[in-house]
Image 1: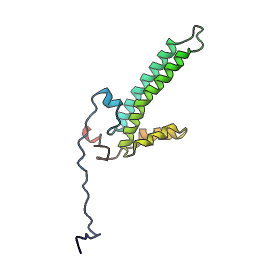
Image 2: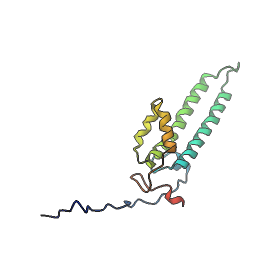
Image 3: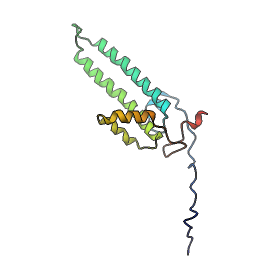
Image 4: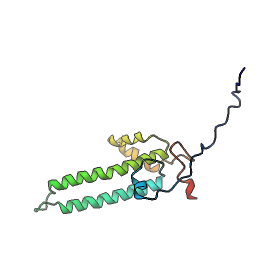
Length: 148
C-alpha cells in the first residue's frame, strides 16, 4: 500500500495560514473606499457614524440652499442634489459593510441583503453586533490582534 494515512491520526492543518499582520488604514481612501481586508465592530460603527453625520449635514445644506422662494418646498435641483448625495454616500457605506462581512468570514455579496425591506434592519443589527472571527481568515489578519 502506497502512503495511506490512518484516519485516527489525520494530518494537522496549520493554525494560521501565514496571514500578514493587520495594517491600520492610513488614508481616507483606505478607510472608506476599499473592500479589501477586515473591519471590526468598533471601526465599522465609527466610520458609518462619520458617513451618517456628514450626509445629514449635507442634506440640511442642500435643503437650505434649494428652498423655493415661498419656503414650503425645495426646488427640482434640490431633489437632484439630494439623490446624488444619497448615491455618493451609499458607495463608501456599502464598502464598509463588505469589509465588516469579511471580518465575519462572509462573502461581500451578502451586502445585497441591505436591498431587501425588513431584512435590511435585521442585517444591519447583525453587522453592528456580531463578533468577528478570531484570528486570521481568508480575508486577512484579525483587526483586533494588533490593538493590544
